[in-house]
Image 1 (cartoon, rainbow, N blue to C red):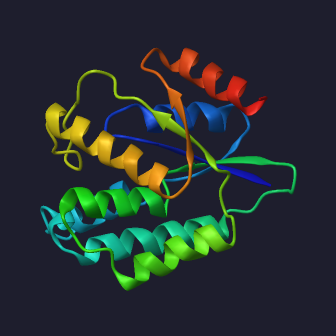
Image 2 (image 1 turned 45 degrees about the horizontal axis):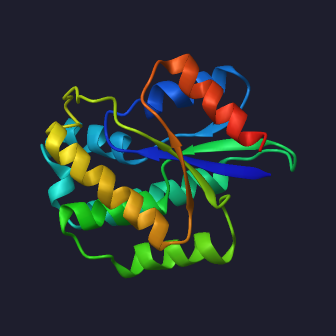
Length: 179
């Protein structure tokens, strides 16, 4: 089984790409942070990302989803973010890298959960705010840099997926799979 990470800054189009890849027959594993934000906000916590425990909650849910996601040995699966993204988020938010996140990062590395080539979805040149995405475009660019630096520091190869229309981006990802 080949598990690939699809990542990038908020609002870069990852979700649309993941949806198209799923429609094209690939296995996908959903992002955790957006779901946790929505749940917390439904419970009356307006900005759950301000709590350091948010990072551990993301890492835990990512791990659960990765473990539950089954596929055949010859399948290709795309994961919308990973524990490395969570580490980048912790750096961006100035939260500590907890023991739980450190252990998850070590598990991902030791068990070679993901391919070392990461599809890094480049920003679209703008950001559309949502209830979960309250970030300026300038901050998006800062987060994008932190994200890329974090992946490189963990030994991943960045496969850039440049800004463009959905179909072109999906075609670029599929072409990179064949290399």
